[in-house]
Image (cartoon, rainbow, N blue to C red):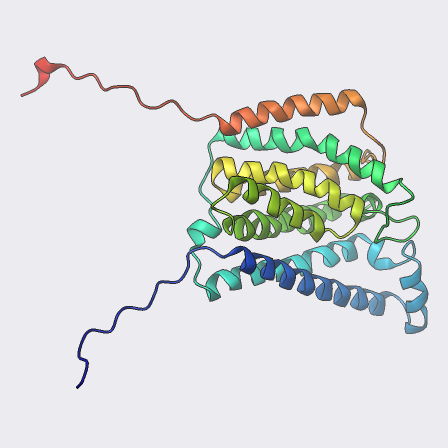
Length: 304
């Protein structure tokens, strides 16, 4: 007997990734990023030094041109970040996730954008305190060699480069990483935890810190990640976290360009308190909801 009943439609694809898929993309992106960065480093060495000097340059980060020349620092960051961004977009397309849910880019209100900036810059002194404390702690390992830190690399990226060099650095070290990293952590990974705001805030922030490898920088960026995550969750859009992320990165570069990057110095207690006050104001702006519309008064005499 032939079953002529209609074939049921296939199940629709999941609109958002699962936590397992989010972690798998993070791991794949991490590996791809490391391989791409390694490739850029080898290209940089091949372009700037003879092969017999490569081992010595790799052993001494203070002399490695890829960690000390502005253009190579930009390339070392921007090229892997672009590849990571393509990986995120490819995963959304491959698994047919909803871009509206995974990568939401609705325009937040002006007050929400201001709130996101106040929140991020408000918690930045706390992140700086943690970074400074850990980078000077003898028991905390570092992925960089003696005499090199994340702060020194930022300084080398813009110091003495002129306004053109600063512009290149702003694109490659501020804008590109902000867009890509927010798409991954506050977009793809956050979407995987839609059922829990706590998990959607903490999970991406922890992975965001681990993504930066260097332990002192990882802790500091995890703190900043909490602020980026709150901006994303409160506004329902990546635009707020992307804008705050890019603006923060740009501020760090501009301060380093003008010779006032602060290096590894610890912010004062007053600076931390002022920052926390700004963060509270920013959070209030983010969580504030517009009042519901009042009742519409109708003039009965005007009715037909």
